[in-house]
Image 1 (cartoon, rainbow, N blue to C red):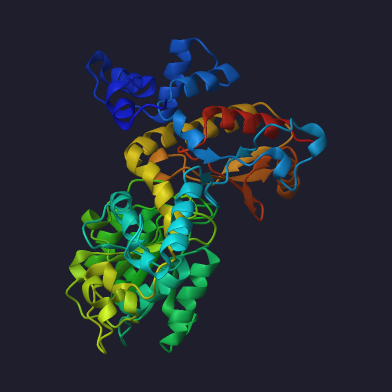
Image 2 (cartoon, rainbow, N blue to C red):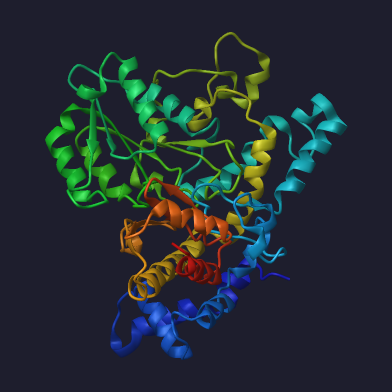
Length: 482
């Protein structure tokens, strides 16, 4: 029987965290240990080499969240199209490090779908307001956990549409250009769909991207964008910027932006601030209400594990609840109590509810709610603690077992080395070998990850990935034949 939430957080002493606390207070010092220092101390305490398989297994034994792994389906090697079936154990699962692209399926999903199918079969149209998960309120079970993950308050979160659609709907209300203030600031290498949306909104309002887009870039020979460079752009161009729309975590580099600092600086310049949280929600703790973020949009099929193309959502700060912004209305933006009265004028819901358009999909909400149950039981703060150490372990093995131990190729990590400036993803640039060849070989040997050009993106997700997953990945990477 897996430990309960209380056992995990309160009763069972997590060796990793206790080591951190003990070391931080030794000799009267009160300082935070880095994840790398924690790994070093554990290696010394256990007298096990950090780069050994035994060390990875010992970390897993002392991980109080390791039972959650059993809540997810891992693809079998025999199922994957690129795997060389002649060199595998047919009963084995793949090494799945691709949750930044598509999260794994929760074992609870099938039951959640069955509940909906049974209610539909048994109740027909009456399932809208009766049954175990009434269709007309199918999005509401998702809201409490989403509020916690986003750091939102009541009525600030809505479940609707998909990410790019939600960005468009938010920009209808929050991108209101004037003759003096008409520009949008976003980062270089934004996810292409985001950039398409930004540019089409600019054109929709009669401008060109050349005159109305400000694209913040890394410095020469750097991969990540410095916060101070964003702040400097705001000082220089803030009075002409109508909207800032950045990624909470940059999909290409894995950089976690300083959402609070950037939001505050932009708003001091009179700019509206929105965030694309596709790679941040379920990955790092967020406090959107406290940070006074104006709006945000997110998908749910990466770290939230709802399934490909599944329903997304929005955040709208309560500061905007009493504003009569232009928007595109639909009947699901009407208050629940009067929606089915079919009045000619909308009786708009409060906050994010009032931005909804159409009846949400019951089966998409069911799969999302099934995964969110797990987040509700564990908590994002606990996952973040594990994630920092798990991702640092990946970085450590890359540095020690690849860069210091092999002459076949080297790996440059694009993602910030500071754990506070990243989530669960490391973006790797291969030096001295063909990245595509290495990626193809990894797939052949049963590793699931993804590539973007010459970059291989790897994400050890703390919900279901283990330290031995990371160790096995590095072992396979070392073995690739070039």
